[in-house]
Length: 184
Image 1: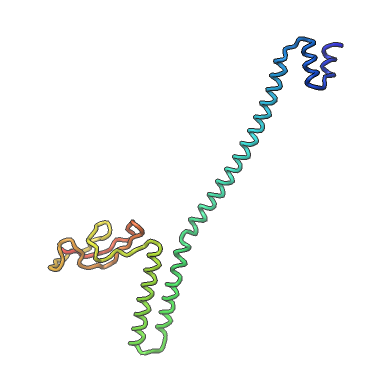
Image 2 (image 1 turned 180 degrees about the vertical axis):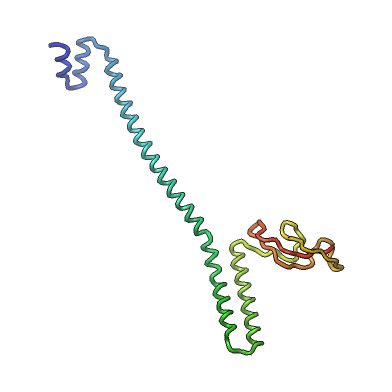
Protein backbone atom coordinates (compact mmCIF):
# COMPACT_ATOMS: atom_id res chain seq x y z
CA UNK A 1 0.00 0.00 0.00
CA UNK A 2 1.37 3.41 -0.91
CA UNK A 3 1.61 6.31 1.51
CA UNK A 4 -1.20 8.15 -0.24
CA UNK A 5 -3.53 5.16 0.01
CA UNK A 6 -2.75 4.78 3.72
CA UNK A 7 -3.48 8.46 4.40
CA UNK A 8 -6.83 8.28 2.59
CA UNK A 9 -7.95 5.35 4.75
CA UNK A 10 -6.95 6.92 8.09
CA UNK A 11 -9.96 7.43 10.38
CA UNK A 12 -8.74 8.04 13.96
CA UNK A 13 -5.88 9.94 15.60
CA UNK A 14 -4.38 6.61 16.65
CA UNK A 15 -4.20 5.53 13.04
CA UNK A 16 -2.50 8.86 12.22
CA UNK A 17 0.16 8.06 14.79
CA UNK A 18 0.58 4.54 13.34
CA UNK A 19 1.03 5.92 9.85
CA UNK A 20 3.52 8.50 11.07
CA UNK A 21 5.46 5.89 12.99
CA UNK A 22 5.55 3.55 10.02
CA UNK A 23 6.81 6.25 7.73
CA UNK A 24 8.96 7.91 10.41
CA UNK A 25 7.19 11.25 9.94
CA UNK A 26 7.90 13.74 12.68
CA UNK A 27 4.99 13.66 15.22
CA UNK A 28 5.76 17.21 16.26
CA UNK A 29 4.09 18.39 13.04
CA UNK A 30 0.89 16.58 13.94
CA UNK A 31 1.01 17.99 17.48
CA UNK A 32 1.65 21.47 16.12
CA UNK A 33 -1.40 21.22 13.88
CA UNK A 34 -3.48 20.03 16.80
CA UNK A 35 -2.22 22.84 19.07
CA UNK A 36 -2.91 25.34 16.30
CA UNK A 37 -6.50 24.14 15.99
CA UNK A 38 -6.96 24.32 19.78
CA UNK A 39 -5.48 27.80 19.84
CA UNK A 40 -7.72 28.84 16.96
CA UNK A 41 -10.81 27.52 18.80
CA UNK A 42 -9.75 29.29 22.01
CA UNK A 43 -9.21 32.53 20.05
CA UNK A 44 -12.66 32.23 18.45
CA UNK A 45 -14.22 31.67 21.88
CA UNK A 46 -12.42 34.71 23.27
CA UNK A 47 -13.51 36.86 20.32
CA UNK A 48 -17.09 35.74 20.83
CA UNK A 49 -16.94 36.54 24.57
CA UNK A 50 -15.36 39.93 23.82
CA UNK A 51 -18.10 40.76 21.31
CA UNK A 52 -20.81 39.85 23.82
CA UNK A 53 -19.21 41.82 26.67
CA UNK A 54 -18.68 44.82 24.39
CA UNK A 55 -22.32 44.71 23.27
CA UNK A 56 -23.46 44.51 26.91
CA UNK A 57 -21.22 47.46 27.78
CA UNK A 58 -22.65 49.54 24.92
CA UNK A 59 -26.21 48.71 26.02
CA UNK A 60 -25.47 49.73 29.62
CA UNK A 61 -23.79 52.91 28.41
CA UNK A 62 -26.83 53.86 26.30
CA UNK A 63 -29.22 53.09 29.18
CA UNK A 64 -27.21 55.21 31.63
CA UNK A 65 -27.07 58.08 29.15
CA UNK A 66 -30.85 57.91 28.69
CA UNK A 67 -31.40 57.83 32.47
CA UNK A 68 -29.06 60.81 32.93
CA UNK A 69 -31.06 62.92 30.48
CA UNK A 70 -34.32 61.92 32.16
CA UNK A 71 -32.90 62.85 35.57
CA UNK A 72 -31.85 66.27 34.27
CA UNK A 73 -35.17 66.82 32.56
CA UNK A 74 -37.19 66.04 35.69
CA UNK A 75 -34.74 67.39 38.29
CA UNK A 76 -37.08 70.19 39.40
CA UNK A 77 -40.17 68.01 39.76
CA UNK A 78 -40.12 67.92 43.59
CA UNK A 79 -39.51 71.67 43.75
CA UNK A 80 -42.43 72.32 41.41
CA UNK A 81 -44.73 70.06 43.46
CA UNK A 82 -43.84 72.02 46.62
CA UNK A 83 -44.71 75.33 44.92
CA UNK A 84 -48.18 74.26 43.74
CA UNK A 85 -49.80 74.81 47.19
CA UNK A 86 -48.38 78.35 47.18
CA UNK A 87 -49.99 78.94 43.81
CA UNK A 88 -53.28 77.59 45.17
CA UNK A 89 -53.10 79.99 48.13
CA UNK A 90 -52.50 82.96 45.81
CA UNK A 91 -55.46 81.90 43.66
CA UNK A 92 -57.68 81.76 46.75
CA UNK A 93 -56.45 85.24 47.76
CA UNK A 94 -57.48 86.63 44.39
CA UNK A 95 -60.90 85.06 44.70
CA UNK A 96 -61.28 86.44 48.23
CA UNK A 97 -60.66 89.94 46.85
CA UNK A 98 -63.85 89.61 44.80
CA UNK A 99 -66.01 88.84 47.86
CA UNK A 100 -68.61 91.30 49.09
CA UNK A 101 -67.36 92.47 52.48
CA UNK A 102 -66.45 95.73 54.19
CA UNK A 103 -63.10 97.04 52.93
CA UNK A 104 -61.46 96.86 56.39
CA UNK A 105 -62.35 93.18 56.87
CA UNK A 106 -61.32 92.34 53.32
CA UNK A 107 -57.96 94.09 53.74
CA UNK A 108 -57.28 92.34 57.05
CA UNK A 109 -58.12 88.90 55.66
CA UNK A 110 -56.04 89.52 52.52
CA UNK A 111 -53.07 90.62 54.64
CA UNK A 112 -53.37 87.53 56.82
CA UNK A 113 -53.63 85.29 53.73
CA UNK A 114 -50.58 86.92 52.14
CA UNK A 115 -48.56 86.42 55.33
CA UNK A 116 -49.51 82.74 55.45
CA UNK A 117 -48.73 82.34 51.75
CA UNK A 118 -45.36 84.05 52.21
CA UNK A 119 -44.57 81.71 55.10
CA UNK A 120 -45.62 78.71 52.99
CA UNK A 121 -43.39 79.87 50.11
CA UNK A 122 -40.37 80.40 52.38
CA UNK A 123 -40.88 76.92 53.86
CA UNK A 124 -40.95 75.39 50.36
CA UNK A 125 -37.79 77.28 49.37
CA UNK A 126 -35.95 76.30 52.56
CA UNK A 127 -36.89 72.66 51.99
CA UNK A 128 -34.89 72.85 48.75
CA UNK A 129 -31.89 74.72 50.17
CA UNK A 130 -32.89 78.30 49.34
CA UNK A 131 -32.63 80.57 52.37
CA UNK A 132 -32.98 84.26 53.09
CA UNK A 133 -29.90 86.07 54.32
CA UNK A 134 -30.79 87.70 57.62
CA UNK A 135 -30.89 91.48 57.65
CA UNK A 136 -28.99 91.38 60.94
CA UNK A 137 -25.89 89.88 59.34
CA UNK A 138 -22.92 92.20 58.88
CA UNK A 139 -22.19 93.61 55.44
CA UNK A 140 -20.53 91.00 53.23
CA UNK A 141 -19.59 92.00 49.65
CA UNK A 142 -20.23 88.39 48.58
CA UNK A 143 -23.85 88.62 49.77
CA UNK A 144 -24.66 92.32 49.60
CA UNK A 145 -24.48 95.06 47.02
CA UNK A 146 -24.08 98.48 48.66
CA UNK A 147 -26.15 100.82 46.48
CA UNK A 148 -25.89 103.79 48.80
CA UNK A 149 -24.03 105.11 51.85
CA UNK A 150 -25.64 107.19 54.53
CA UNK A 151 -24.55 108.91 57.74
CA UNK A 152 -25.98 107.20 60.80
CA UNK A 153 -25.32 107.78 64.46
CA UNK A 154 -27.03 104.51 65.40
CA UNK A 155 -24.78 102.29 63.22
CA UNK A 156 -21.05 101.83 62.94
CA UNK A 157 -19.30 102.46 59.64
CA UNK A 158 -19.86 99.59 57.20
CA UNK A 159 -22.99 98.25 58.93
CA UNK A 160 -26.22 97.76 57.04
CA UNK A 161 -28.66 100.60 57.70
CA UNK A 162 -31.47 99.65 55.33
CA UNK A 163 -32.29 96.79 52.98
CA UNK A 164 -33.96 97.50 49.63
CA UNK A 165 -33.87 93.92 48.41
CA UNK A 166 -33.14 90.80 50.46
CA UNK A 167 -30.28 88.46 49.63
CA UNK A 168 -30.86 84.74 49.07
CA UNK A 169 -28.52 81.78 49.15
CA UNK A 170 -28.80 78.37 47.57
CA UNK A 171 -26.98 76.10 50.02
CA UNK A 172 -23.56 77.83 50.23
CA UNK A 173 -23.79 79.90 47.05
CA UNK A 174 -25.22 83.37 46.66
CA UNK A 175 -28.39 83.10 44.63
CA UNK A 176 -29.10 86.83 44.63
CA UNK A 177 -27.18 89.67 46.26
CA UNK A 178 -29.09 91.94 48.60
CA UNK A 179 -29.35 95.64 47.78
CA UNK A 180 -28.48 97.54 50.94
CA UNK A 181 -27.61 100.95 52.30
CA UNK A 182 -24.54 101.02 54.57
CA UNK A 183 -23.43 103.49 57.18
CA UNK A 184 -20.49 105.84 56.58
